[in-house]
Length: 230
View 1 (cartoon, rainbow, N blue to C red):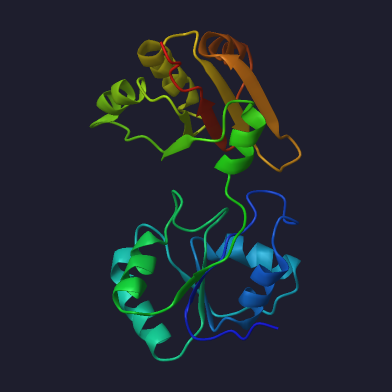
View 2: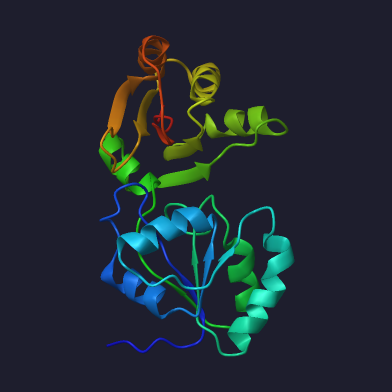
């Protein structure tokens, strides 16, 4: 059995269904001296579900990570095993974690990233769009640079993946229609791995029409067809 040494462990957690976690991830969470959590309440639900005795947890989110990174790095350097989790998915992918990982690497502190859930992979595969080559955009900027980026991406030949809030999906779809054209194919996945998981596929115009008649709820991944060769 692998020996757990003092280092930073990046631990992916389920994006919905609590069964989607590896045995190795559970072992790391049991053995860690400290669990950094985007929301300690959400992490607590996961730990209790697997009967993991409550570890010392500390909030580590985008509003405080700049101020806590140095202290955490010193703790690992001092011999502690620290695990970082987010509310769902893999830390660092549109979630806190990057700053801490970068600082550990800069300081020569080992970082071990476990494989595990990330929302855009099942959405990409289930879209039916080419997934041999793709680009992940995550959340677009809300204001400055948004239109410029969309204009640039309209020429992208690879499949494109976005994260978006359910409250802003229609806005993004309308902008995609403007920049990419209403006939570009798109897939919208919501509530992945959960009871109400759903994927809608069609042209941008068809998906806009669908959501004009149906309320969209839950976390959303949008996968867009790349520009076809002329």
